[in-house]
Structure formats: structure tokens, C-alpha cells
Image (cartoon, rainbow, N blue to C red; front, side, top):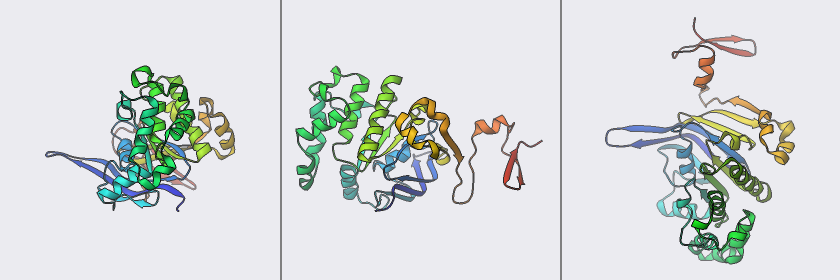
Length: 298
């Protein structure tokens, strides 16, 4: 078993219509370690949700390499991909309608995915006991008999997390899990993720626009125009305290790094270039001992 739960190299995704081709990912290079809790951020259209869909087996790569839990998603046939989605990954959506059946109770919603497990796995994961355990883990056991209309947005999302855990996945993928809830509920949902990560060692990748949420994880990867442009990693000397506290005051304890691709190319943020007066597509570069200086052309 490799140390990385996700490994992608030169990952490309092209969406084609009759008149148009859109390159959503342009050679993405990214690894996620087993047991890691990390966030992916980026503007709309940057490719972050496209990556999540491919890691979850919901979409196929156009080119490159993508391994999840040591399985080659690029080479999988449809039957293998279906088994992969049933066994290896759990998915939490922003839109609760994709997670929950409104005419079922919270408990019945969590039990439902277990009915689709293979016979050899049913004994391990089926039954009301395990569903109740999951609801308790997300703080929703007291609402087990409530239906969708009787739950708040935050409560629905916590039930959705329990559903995503019903198949005991190795990897949990969450696409904008706090996009439809308030700040307080957002913090509670992240606490659920952190607890799952720390107590169960579950690997969790969160795609989000919520910078407050992103600041509370140990690593933040920024995707821009289909490539990784930067990473923020909590400083090693504060890592243990960060795990204990995990609040917004700790945000300044992240170190920021620009990321080089395999060809040594560097992607700079437009906002940073504008700050130094760069208006076009040309810059001046000067090497000074251990520094590379980038300046606007005169």
C-alpha cells in the first residue's frame, strides 16, 4: 500500500461540445497522503470540482495518470468503476437533494446505501446498529426519526456525511460541504471532519470557496486554470497546537509556497502581479545569488 491515497500526474480533462472544447484540467500534478485532511480552493472554473469528480469515479480523465487507493482510475472498466464507487470512496455534495431522500427518515437514509453492498460485505456494515453509530458520530442520533423537512440545512448536511460513511470508505470527498450553511454550522461540520480524520484516520479532501474553512486544515492547495499554483502548509512547530485549537487565529501559522510543475514552470497569481505593476504578459527576471527577482518591465 503506497503512502499516497491520491496520486495524479499530468492530469488532463477536456469537455467537448459540437462547437467548443474546454480544458478543465491542464496537466494537474497533485498527491494526497493517506490520513490527510486537506482543502482545495480556487475560483469558479479553476478545475477543482472536476478533479474531485474524477477522484470519485464520477468522470473520466482525458489524459494523464490518476491513482486512488492504488487503483488506476484511467484503466478501469465500467464494472470496476462501479465497484470502486461502492467500496473505496464516500461523497458529500453541497446540494442535499443529491444525498438524501425526502420521504425517508435520517436513519433510513443512512441504512439505504448498505442494502446495495456485496454479500460478503453486508455482514460487516449493514444493520441499524452501524447506522445509529454513524448518526451519533455526526451528532444526529437524536434526529434519527426526522425526515428532510424537519431538519435544518446544517442537520441535513451532517446526515449526508453519515450516509457517505455507510460503505466504510478509505477516502471521503466533499464538494462545497458548507456552501449552504451559516458560519457557525460551517465550523461544526468541519469539526465533524476533523474528528473523523483524527479518530479514524480517514483521508478527507474538501473542495471549498470558504476561506475560513480552508484555514482550519493542515494543507490548502490552490488550483488556477487547471493546475496547482500554490500550497499553504501549517508550520511544523505549530502542528500539534493547530490540531488542538484549529481556529481562525491559527490562520497566520500557515506557510505559503508557490508550486513548480515537472517542467519547472511557475504559475503566479494575477493579483500578485498587479501589485508589482505587471499589466501585460511580460516580466523582468533577475537571479541574485539565492534569489530570483520578478519585476514589471520599465
